[in-house]
Image (cartoon, rainbow, N blue to C red):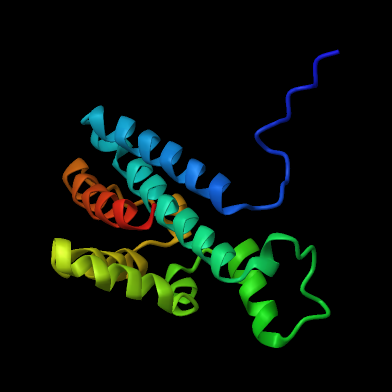
Length: 161
């Protein structure tokens, strides 16, 4: 008998490989919105592109702190572990996540030799700019702004994937 198809809304345990797959798919979605050239799709493209970085950073959290992959609840863990769990499963604050990932900054700094300081600087810019509140914004970005943001994300994605 065939297994029932699981809903895209089903809750599941996060895994680095799954988060990287999601990052690739959402980046493709952001590019599809950008290709429309329609300014009304710019906010969606930017939101999805920022979510790509969130997924990649959370994948790095799971690699750096493997216990996060199986921890159902952080209740019996240290305060720092509870913060890490919350960053992985509840938070969308990219700046706060990156503070717990010095290895990511080092990885991007090592890429500076190939690409110049762009990836590290672009990640800092993305983390400072993007928030989940974009999904509630009534301000309309232009497709030019979206294209610039997607270029930054593309550069960071290349280094973190």
